[in-house]
Length: 95
View 1 (cartoon, helix red, strand yellow):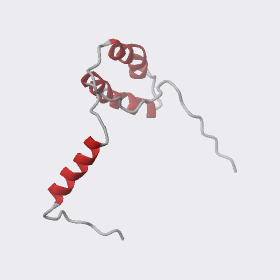
View 2 (cartoon, helix red, strand yellow):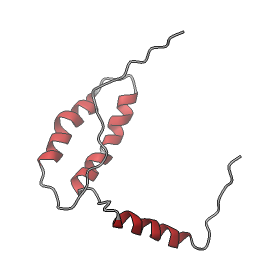
View 3 (cartoon, one colour):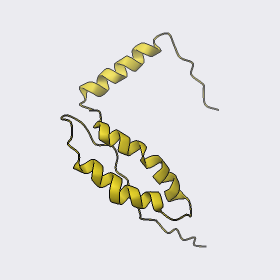
View 4 (tube, one colour):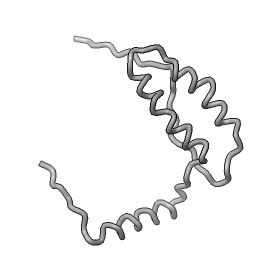
């Protein structure tokens, strides 16, 4: 059974040290418009998993994503992880 670790008195210092390493490594925050687009992916991801028509996927792929790409970017911002929509993997069970 895994050991449950309780926060120590130096937990806040550990978090801040980890954050300093992240910033010093050049991990930059995403552009605000891309953060909003990333949050809007949640219902698209849920719809992608369900066997229902891909309405929000279609809207996200053909409207939301191009609109965000057309907006100006703030300097020194990163890009969130990219997902491919409107593509499915067919799994086959072999015996």
